[in-house]
Image (tube, rainbow, N blue to C red):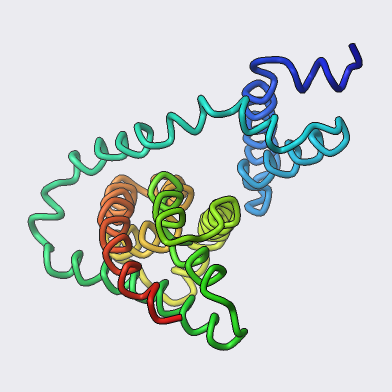
Length: 232
């Protein structure tokens, strides 16, 4: 048996590769302090490079990491913990939080709608990108239901999250948004779980509000995309 066949036929090589790549990404990020060396971005580059060099197909790798995909939904639900710890903030500012999250969702959908018109995207490409700002666990289902290309949806969600994780804090500082609730809502509604990891680094309130935005924006997006998907 060749080395390539041994690797591709191994039951958990995909899981080991994914975890190892992410671990290297975390180490590089902490060691250098360079924000663009995002652990997820680094792990994607390392994993893709390995698969290409080893000649392993995406289908084989995807089959290996199904167990990781399985934990996407429960790991998202765990974000309720910091939300519960900051429940008093929600009770104090329900209207502002609701309007902020809804505005974030509509801004995302309208931006995709506008760019689809501008660049002449067909219906399939349009609905593929509509769920770009919600967590992968929800976005995959939305894309599949609307007839989008699920792998491309996943990539757009990941890219959106990485960009938010790297640049959100700097951007909020530039536009002088200082309220922790506003920061959390902006990050969570724009860049879902990956952005929320940055929000949690910024503070407990930011992390809790970002967690709330993930769940709420996911629900609103599911409803809104069913309407907006018919426009193109």
